[in-house]
Image (cartoon, rainbow, N blue to C red; front, side, top):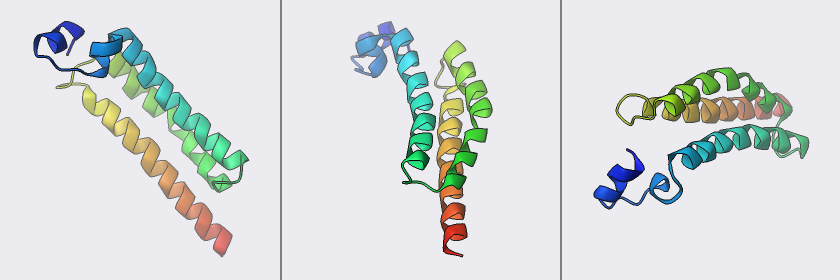
Length: 105
């Protein structure tokens, strides 16, 4: 939905308040920040070093986010955002678990 569509139906979304361009930048920044926080977590020893293997996912995530940013449509491209979020989450959880198991053994 565009800002105008949101205004017409009184839907107060992030796009409504800050505009599409800024909302897309916030989305991208959140993904970048998620990867930075993985590195910070490992450096501060909150996460096992094996969690850094989650950093193999950015090329896939980048491609999916790029599709959504170029053609933001809930019906056709929003699933790219959801898959990207799941990819980051699942890879991080998986590598945390494997890192813990290796540390315990």
